[in-house]
Image (cartoon, rainbow, N blue to C red; front, top):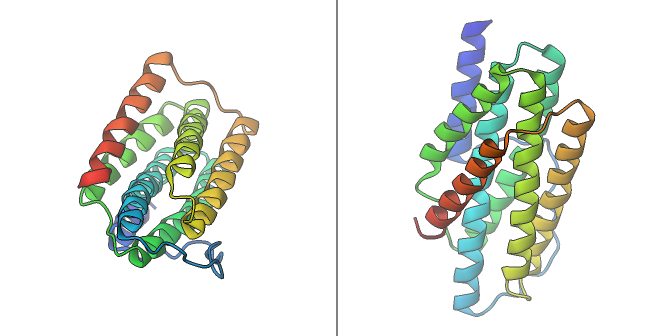
Length: 208
């Protein structure tokens, strides 16, 4: 069983970083939406923003994978892996949009995957409440981040906007479910550290 988990964790890391995550099978929400971004500067700006969102989804994969690996609760592991599959959809949608914008994923993805996995595993080892508490803290932070990016996107970029709006709905649902399953609030210092880490990740992904 332990060997299988180790293999599964490595497999997810490789698939995530190689852009081959299968997802849950949902269609890209921007499918059928016209791509009306014509000006090069608009595409560059949208590309940088979507690169940040893609990096966040790489880290989300790592967090959920680490959390599932660290918990001894089969029911909770199942819930975490289901949320991870939905986050794989986000990753795939962001990858699609980056290609359309002729942009690329951040080169720092492997670093953030490692950081995220370690955070998730550590939270899981502290127990169910802490494990779910990390889900709530991260998803609420992502919700706020997506609100900011929706305001920053060029008004004409309906394709990116449609993707981010669906992602936002999913993140809210993940946080709400974790609260209902018994999440415990994280310590203040942990919340502060998460916000600081988010700022570092965002600034790095904008340019690298």
